[in-house]
Amino acid sequence: MAVLAGRLARRWCFGLLRSPTQVPALGLHAGSPTMRTSQKDFNDAVSQVKLLKEDPGNEVKLKLYALYKQATEGPCNVPKPGMLDFINKTKWDAWNALGSLSKEAARQKYVDLVSSLSTSSKSPSPETPAADRKPPEGNSLVVTSEDGITTIRLNRPTKKNALTTQMYHDIIAALQAASKDESTITVLTGSGDYYCSGNDLTNFTHLSAGGLEEMARSGEVLLRDFVDCLIDFPKPLVAVVNGPAVGISVTILGLFDVVYATDRATFHTPFSHLGQSPEGCSSYTFPKIMGSSKAAEMLLFGKKLTAQEACARGLVTEVFPDGTFQKEVWARLKAYSKLPPNALRISKQIIRKQEKEKLHAVNAEESSVLRERWLSDECMNAIASFLSRKAKL
Ligand SMILES: CCCCC/C=C/CC(=O)SCCNC(=O)CCNC(=O)[C@H](O)C(C)(C)COP(=O)(O)OP(=O)(O)OC[C@H]1O[C@@H](n2cnc3c(N)ncnc32)[C@H](O)[C@@H]1OP(=O)(O)O
Image 1 (cartoon, rainbow, N blue to C red):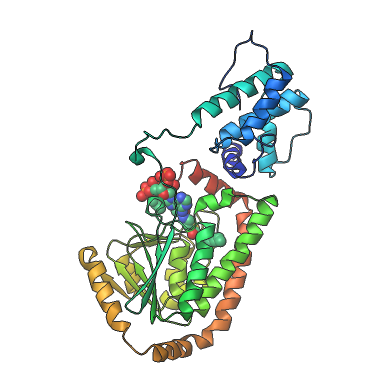
Image 2 (image 1 turned 60 degrees about the vertical axis):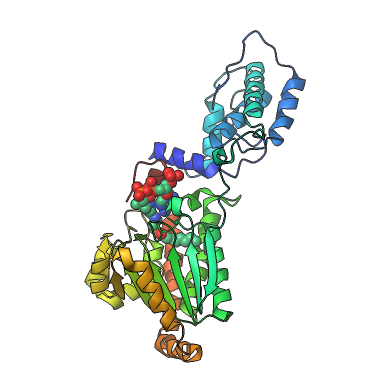
């Protein structure tokens, strides 16, 4: 637990340790014992950190933090933060690990480390081939409108379309826009071999100053807003499940009007494995769709369904062979999109009306329970395990 929590904490530091004095293990550059570093060299290095063009990463920031503290205050002299105060405990551990290193030696190591960073973070030369440069990750969500269909496409194929916090916000905005646009039908689908791997587990590493509690609180609000938006969506909402689906991308399917899946798709809700609990109104919609014992096998024990099983249980409308999936599904959707939009809207309203209040209440309760779950040891250990690459589904 301690090791995993430490790893998670290190990830959680990311984005929080922004200034050099707040930032980051030990002697990447031991420095020459005979070389003396002046206070001015040290001050210059502190200023230089602010000018670094690239984020040096958490490990380095933690080293810088510890060396700065040792250089300015000497050996660690403050009480150890509590177990759950991950960030301050990680910083304390890094500083304390420097033991009785002298202030002067710490200054030297700090200056050496900054100097190595300055060299390695120089801008790429004009000769650097474009192919060797890492493209920025943008357009995680692509929204298009054509033939009466607005398509919201999850577009992070290298991360199996895991949903970042920003993507939840963007999907909400896209749904709001689609509810008012000219289109008749709205589709959610994914790019690449996955439909979606669920919540991006690194969302848990982006802590603000309010720490874990704040992360859980804002997560609850965002989750509730996201699911509310699906509950209230006024037009036919179709999921085109182009590959495996995990977590929240599965649970919300009960709020869609139609779900088409390739025969390569699987449906997996590993909440207990993650120390979490069901969301997306699945605690209500799944028992209703497939009966309580089948729903329990999925939501409690994380049974992964094939597309055919999901179809037999009523979660999926129809399964198509992977080779013809895109062609068949889009041809069908194009035909449906020619139906009178107002009739579709009104019919959907009648079908869903009786349930709306219930669904909003279920959503509020599920989101509130999840907030507590996110603060639990079970959940933290599971996420730390994934982030340290020890656990996969
Ligand atoms: C507002 C907040 C709301 C929160 C609502 C709560 C929702 C609950 C859930 O959604 S629970 C489900 C969470 N998802 C998971 O637990 C899935 C975790 N991922 C995996 O187990 C596997 O990655 C896999 C089975 C999906 C795919 O395995 P495969 O071996 O085919 O591929 P890789 O593991 O190598 O993955 C490729 C890269 O994608 C990254 N990645 C995949 N899924 C996620 C994810 N959910 N979160 C973050 N990152 C993910 C993976 O780390 C690889 O990245 P890398 O190449 O940089 O290592």
